[in-house]
Image 1: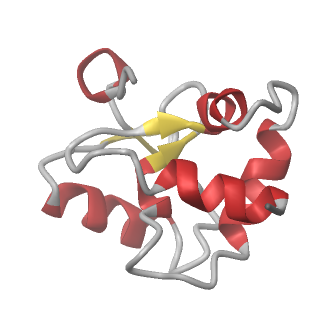
Image 2 (image 1 turned 135 degrees about the vertical axis):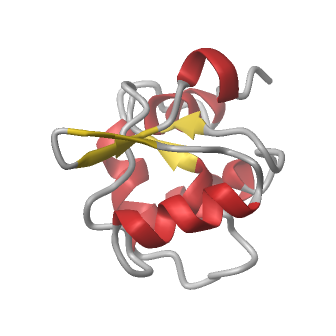
Length: 104
């Protein structure tokens, strides 16, 4: 299995209404120091709608300003549809990890 495929399989397990961090996904696939590479894989995600990459945020809960499918506002909208609100801080959008972090 390729690194990208491992990332996509792990991200598919994040339930609706929850988020995970890039680092969490890296840990799940056995590559704990590969959080940035996870981000790269998700940016290349060819399975929009099948791999819910909108459920992955950074370690502070920040959404991706360069979200592959339309930027942080699109990511925020997809999360809101699943009941995950975001908060605007200094022009960036965040999810409350205390409330919405997935704990597998």
